[in-house]
Length: 210
Ligand code: CDP
Image 1 (cartoon, rainbow, N blue to C red):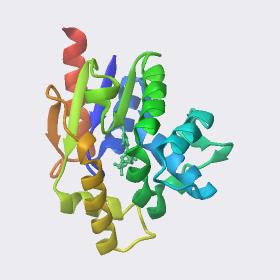
Image 2 (cartoon, helix red, strand yellow):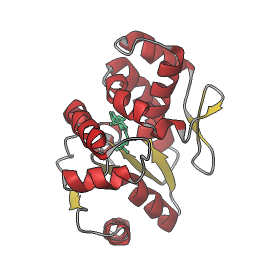
Image 3 (tube, rainbow, N blue to C red):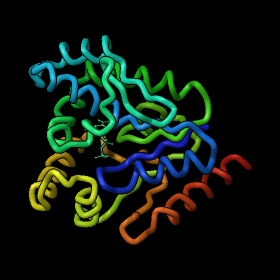
Image 4 (cartoon, rainbow, N blue to C red):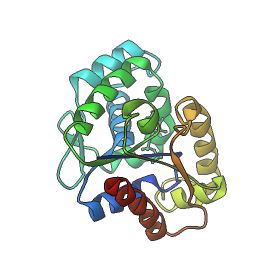
């Protein structure tokens, strides 16, 4: 069974998806980390981020991999922490916008999804990557709360700059941020992580029983 968890930055996707995968004994796939790792590599090599064909080729030649502890690797480097810095935050949507890049990522994500039970988080999982997912959830939250949550994970940047970055990225991501028509929307503004996980787990159990 595939559980698709989509939504904007700071809505709680990663924390919830990880905890849910753990509870269910499912694999966990963070598709954002794949776009982030590619962005890290493109920046490291000084590639122009406007060139879709070159970035698509880079993605094809340098698959992103995860180890059993969900550490993220590209081109032989462990980039787990490097991809969570604000330089990558700022550029990742620019890289992720290219159809050539998305095609490569989509293919890999579908291969991973085909390997069995998984919780997959991203922006377009329920709409494009796995539209047949058994359970689809779209997490949302008040923008101020999303900025505050993200601030605790980004000690390298001030609150105002972070709120601006988040808003910009929402705008850039908008095209692929539409909830799937059949996704269950959950507003996490006032909910604890455990409550969100419990709600989704109930959806999964109901679906499995059906
Ligand atoms: O955790 P946060 O929501 O900040 O970001 P993420 O899930 O790590 O995704 C980073 C960026 O990758 C997003 O802002 C999108 O530009 C892109 N992305 C995408 O285009 N499609 C996905 N399935 C996942 C991420």
